[in-house]
Image (cartoon, rainbow, N blue to C red; front, side, top):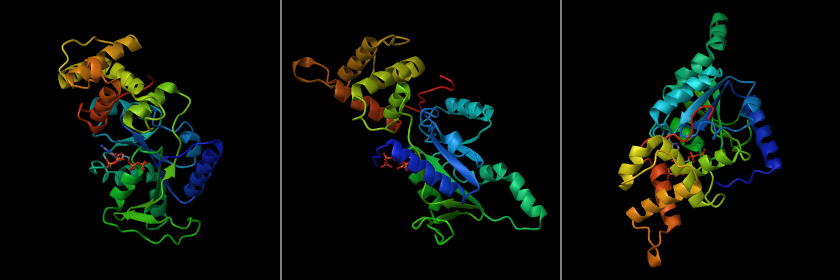
Length: 288
Ligand code: G4P
């Protein structure tokens, strides 16, 4: 899905989420575990401030587990609970209910002390495009136990999905816009496929990725592409182009005249990264 984020659309997206917040108890903020900061909407704290929030580090199957643990500590230090999941395979999804319960413990206890039977918690998933919102919703809907959407204030077409006995989820997520102003975040978003390649040039994205990978995952890179030599870091663009060239040669991305086809080599590298063929990798560190 391509969304053009003009100021009017952002205002509308914000308003739509604010409307949905009135119906729910807890927000699930979905981030990409490989780029938790860059995949965060810049205004999410402000927009969702009226509700308890659980940060979900999705695509954890593709991220470096040590880095995911580091990010969890970072968010915790900022007062935000986190939970790592793989919405595709369903890993960690069941635990969502208990994590949400922990956040709403006080409210639940209050209901119990008043002699009320706590009703299922109602949740809304929010996040930027491509972070896995639909995948998670489908995963939670798994057994297709959808309830009626005929509730006051629910926009036509919205339904509650019940997960187990304790959680109800709005089946339409809150879609937020990604970071536009930070060029590095833009490269990270492009590297993971969250923004399309026509926005940034593919070989520039590949060179950005190589810089991160050489500095953090050099041995893996060397082995995957059979590279003889790999510097410990890439001080400039030319150094990154040199590595891309070596990868292209090793993988036969050659055009007439024996030159390396950089676009082809870049596509290959990014495909390997996104599919996890390079291994589990995280492209940014807290406060980096
Ligand atoms: P959105 O609603 O937030 O826009 O995202 P969506 O669920 O459409 O997911 C975007 C892509 O991310 C999909 O891949 C989806 O399969 C993948 N994805 C979502 N969650 C996970 C996860 O936890 N792990 C991994 N590895 N991938 C995840 P796609 O390439 O668009 O489609 P496809 O590969 O499923 O065919």
